[in-house]
Length: 512
Image 1 (cartoon, rainbow, N blue to C red):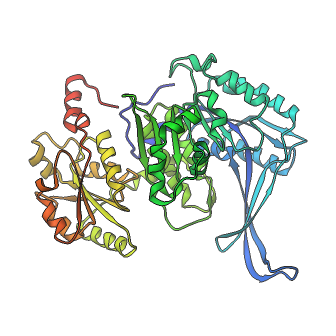
Image 2 (cartoon, rainbow, N blue to C red):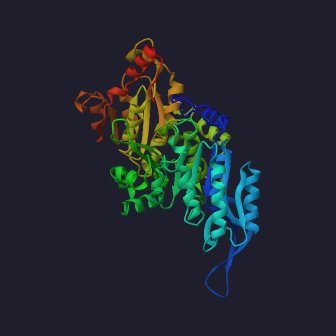
Image 3 (cartoon, rainbow, N blue to C red):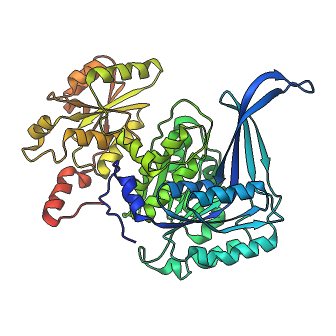
């Protein structure tokens, strides 16, 4: 399969380009049928102080590992699904919905001794009142043996394999042994060079440590699962992400994974991996939460988009950013849903014209301030976006709740950088910056300094990157005049735009 270049960015055309790759991805794991029953509550029952829900609508969708498979298919992957269901109505419905989505269900076994796991949520007025779970106490041994026999064929020619182990029993005993033989570090498939037939191995499990012997490429625990990996209780609030980052090496060791992406719900994600310099490298994404809805399965969407992007050859950080965007699409919907190629492209397209005028931005900032949010402002050219930029912007985001990025206009960039800059026009620069999950608002300014914007917005924090001190900045007096704070962030000279452009001109290459 052709590999996408490391130069790919988070743009609206990217989901379509990924779909064109059509990577073969095998999903192995615990299938669930999610039910969403909605109705009216007008009285309480006589037998107990419990509301009577008059069910008006029943919706069903594949859940668990089956939801991961559905999301992959919607994003353009060729999907093989391996699981076990019962010979019951729920099992038949699962197989039918998966097949209708174009998923290969030859590896989905129906067993008379199984009860297909179902989770029926009963709601009224958008509020879930009750969840009814139905599942088997264990998976029959003969079924596991039959499922294990299917593993080699299901993995043959796969670009990636995702193990979705939610503890329901489909990935134990002979199935686990078969996966170890086929995917373990010493197996023939895993010894092949990347891109020559060696599949990407992703572990999405309640207990990732149980798959550490596979040495997976990626593990994707949520906050609770990461806490179990570390053997501690994670702190709440703003301290949660720094705590996870401080234990990055322990997470990688416990999971056995080359990289660990911890999903933190409304707080986005934190990726930890070993950098090229031998030190632990991290990458943060930020969710875009809206009003609470009864959504389910956004984590499955995240894992699907992440795996698809990595299988197609995108860099890990770009893949994580794209996966966050896909999760943002579905988390704003009620029920269990999927993110399609078209929906993801539309979501990214929304950032194309997102630069606000100063007046529009002032209204947005005032609304945030009324809600008690801390405003952070930073500015720059952000011409050829590179890792130094994203690292800096993620640091700026952590100084408050809302990050506003003010871009130098094209004319001011020419005055600062010379007649051959900017490489990218201000509309393009604004679209790329706005697509970053850490950025909340973007504006363009045309004055020599952002002082007029500072005086208008009065941000709580003005962040600046580079080898400055607050005393060197003309903006400091304006910020301190109303009680704001100036913060100087990391300077990353080896990743400067000038260095990137010099490399392009001399060798025709870019940094990854």
